[in-house]
Every structure is written in C-alpha cells, then in structure tokens.
Image 1 (cartoon, rainbow, N blue to C red):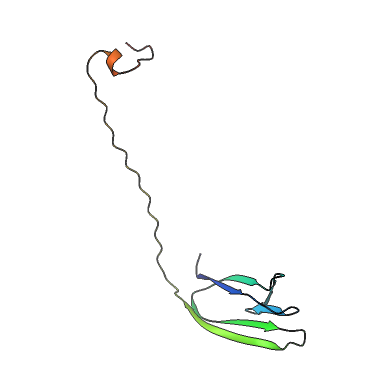
Image 2: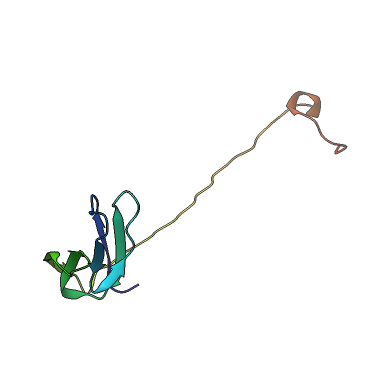
Amino acid sequence: MSGGAVTVYGENVPEHHQVFVLGQRVPVSANGDFVAKEILPGGDHQIHVQVLDHYQQGIDFSRSLHIPKDELFYVALGELTIGSTAGSGPSSFVGETDGLD
C-alpha cells in the first residue's frame, strides 16, 4: 500500500441531515453516528467534511493533512529452537522404548 488511511468519525448528526466526506455521501446511523475511511496517496491534502440539511445548509469544515510519501515499514520474524537430549542407564529408567532395544 502506498499512502495512508484517513478515518473521519462523527456523532450527533441531526435527523434528516446528510454527511459528505471528501465529496462522497456517507451513511448516517439511526443514532446520528457516521464513519468514513479513505486511503490517500502521500502528499498534502485537505479533508473536507459537510453536514447538510435538505436545503444544503449546515456546516462545512476542512482539515489539512500531510501523508509522508516514503515511509519504511519493516516486519521481522525469527524462530530459534535449541535442544539437547541425554540419558544413561537402562531404558526402563529413561522412559518407554516403544519396542526399540
């Protein structure tokens, strides 16, 4: 993935209002909550959010955002298993032999 994920969340949207994030209409729950997530390329962005009634009246605001173009992300996995087995004496003292002599 190149870029970054931007999440916009809001609550208490009045009944019969619509929400737009980056120009796209976002569903609003019966409780008046909404969430929108977009993946944007690296660079400078203006995140526009509108909450409008049926007359296209309401609030309109934006926030500036910078997403780094180059960011390193590393994942490293490793496994090391070291073991040793030793025993002496008759096998009856060491454990079951499962038919081995």
